[in-house]
Amino acid sequence: MYCRMCGTFLKDSSKFCSKCGAEVFRKNFKSSKNIDFKQGEYINEKNNKLSVFLVFITILIALGFIIFVSISTQNII
Image (cartoon, rainbow, N blue to C red; front, side, top):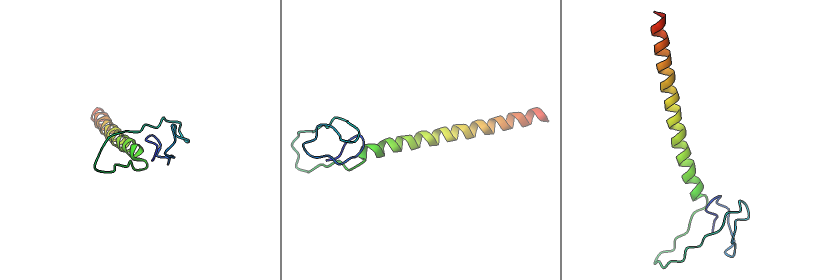
């Protein structure tokens, strides 16, 4: 099993992650399929959100720069 916060491999008997200290949660449910969380699944989700945020900020900065340049060139002429 892997830590849901940092992706570190954990022993089955672990109650806390040895790397980040996060509490280990075990889901007890009946299922016909074995569900296993992949290492870093939570981290990948956070990285995806961060990437979308950075792209959004970059677009806003670019638009702001374009507007600033267009306004400043209109005042010169």
